[in-house]
Structures are given as C-alpha cells and as structure tokens.
Length: 173
Image (tube, rainbow, N blue to C red; front, side, top):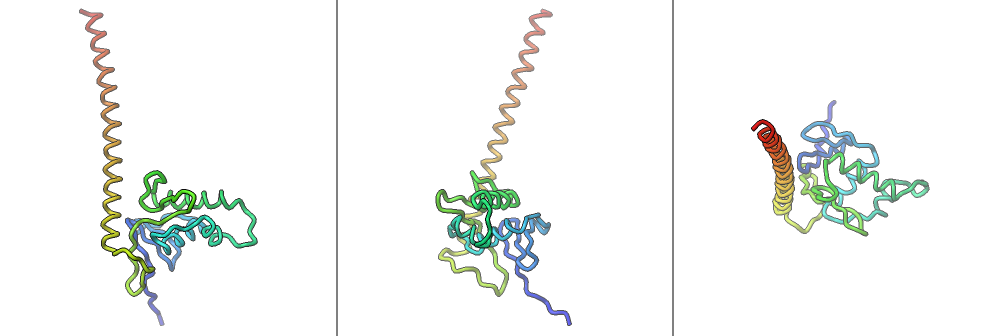
C-alpha cells in the first residue's frame, strides 16, 4: 500500500525548501547546504518577517552542552545560507542583518496547500509585490553598475587607441 505524503515545499523567489527531504532547491535543482545552515534557513523561514536573535540561532543550532565558538559558528552558518541563496549582505533579498539584534528572512513565502503559514499581519499579495519590486530594483542597480564599468572600460580603450593613432600620426607625418 503506497501512501502519498502531502507536499511540504515552501517556495520563495526561485527557491523551494523541501521540508520532508531536508533540501533546498533552486528551479528544481538541489542546492548543497550543510545541516546547520539548513536548520538556520528553516528557522528564519519559520519566522519570516521577524527578527531572530543570535542567541535564538545558537539555541536552535547547538545543544546546551556544546562547546564551540558560537559567534563564529553563527557567522559561518549565515554566510553559507547567503551563499546558497546568492544573497548579498549589503543588498539582501532574502536574509537581512539587523545590527545588534539578529537576522530577518524578508522574501514572501508560498506555503503548501493545506498548510497554514505562520500568522502574519501583512497581506501575502502585498508582501510579494513589495519583495518583487525590491528584487527588480536590485537587478536594475546591478545592470547600471555593469553598464558603467563597460563605459569606463570602453572610454579607456578608446583613449588608448586615439593616443596610439596620435603618436603614429606625429611620427609618420
């Protein structure tokens, strides 16, 4: 007798967090994530929009009798989550650092049918629209920066070519 288990996939952006398989997927492909960063991502997603303190992260990721450098461990786990998501700490789309307080997962989530999302005051459609606008602004800014770099490189190359032409004209004229 084959019993079908309901889907337990939380979606955000191009990502899916498969809660049953314990995997992070991007566009259907598995993104490697070690157990502690995965647990951290689960914790942040379970409290979407809320600040999760470093102490709460420490309590979730390590047992009370574990002796490790928690500060370094939390930093490392956050860094690995951001790398897996392709997120930037300076311009985050997913994990925001709230100085001296903790971290907040910012992207809107789509929960499986039949599974209620955590209580949230904001409307999901509004949250998605705001997040998509933020994502669009970030992508537009990155495109502008790339164009600026290309213009500077083209200007330098053009100046170099003009300089060589001027030298050649002076030498052979």
